[in-house]
Image: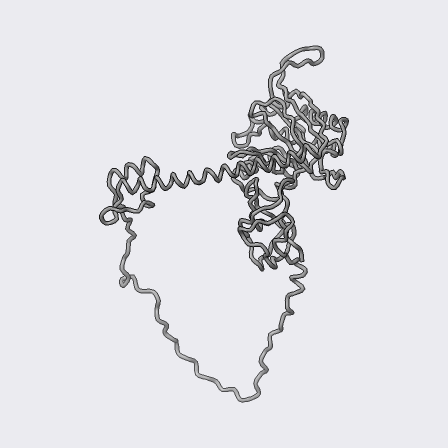
Amino acid sequence: MSEFIMPSLGADMETGILVEWNVEPGDRVKRGDIIAVVETDKGVIEIEVFEDGVVDEILVQPGEEVAVGTVMAIIRSEEVTAAKKPPAVEAVRPKPSTGPVIKQAPAGPEEKPSLVQPAEARPLILPTKKRLKASPLARKLAAELGIDLGTVPGTGPDGAINQADVERVAQAQKATEKAAKPAAAEFRVGMRQAIAAAMARSNREIPHYYLEKRIDMSRALQWLEAENRRRSVKERLLPAVLLIKAVALALGDVPELNGYWIDDQHQPRKEIHIGFAISLRQGGLVTPAIHHADLKSLDELMATLDDLITRTRAGRLRSSEMTDATITLTHLGDLGVEKVYGVIYPPQVALVGLGKITEAPWAENGLLGVRPVLTATLAADHRATDGRQGAKFLEAFNHYLQEPDKL
């Protein structure tokens, strides 16, 4: 037996509301299956199960607010399930009779009544489309407001729809939209409060140090332009995937920055799961994890990033994507920001900030020119690493961007 508990989907999360179960008692589940949906301050998250088994009992009902760590369901392992199965019962065959055998005469063919009427007996019924009765003014107004006349109850003679009926439905729709706005505003407030709580904890508990490095992006951008010229529009790569891959490879060289600080101990991780900061349309940021970023090709990273952004903004993230990030990458270059000094998201020990690629003076080999330059910053936890290791990471990041064909 194992317990399925409410996971912590962020350092600032204390409770979540169970929206729905995707399973019932008796259902078999496999590792990675989505079995529940939970609402938090950061949105609606799909919760995965991390072992194979059978759902034995559900302990929490949809709509309940559940504290982190609460047992939500009991899952029985496959071994226990197999052990509980009753032994197969061998079918008992009747013993052959020793008495005389009496043969019965074969019965004649039994006539069964036909359930299908012959074609000539069936009436031909053709579907007819009922035309809605509506005044010309009502039809014109509904078309202007984008209202389906089929949803408008008519109050005229024989149920005919008039202009007042359409206006009444339009007012009801406006009222519904107006009522939805406070809910969106409430979500934004909750999101800001959650982010504020996490960042306050970070500033309070983590001794940050910051490093900065300017990187010549001319080789990387020239390679990317030539590569995209050979591709169709749908297959083209964005500069962001080069940056993600370079960060992942640099973490392989300096693994101390990839991991957590938990229980006053530094806990590096072998798996490199980069949390990529994504802005939400309703406000706020979410940093879901790109799993095994170092092992993915540039094409795989592009597909993963597209999928992750779409699902994040649609509110369809998985719990593992919210909890597995071993480092955070925030990129604000699309907003014109040249330098980003981030705050580490606990329990992680580092955050990489990337700004806008800008044309800037660049001196090399005694010659002065203009190059596309990216400013990369590192915020790191001084309890886990020091400035020397941070500098090695930034230099490794720069090294990989100078050899883009090897990414």
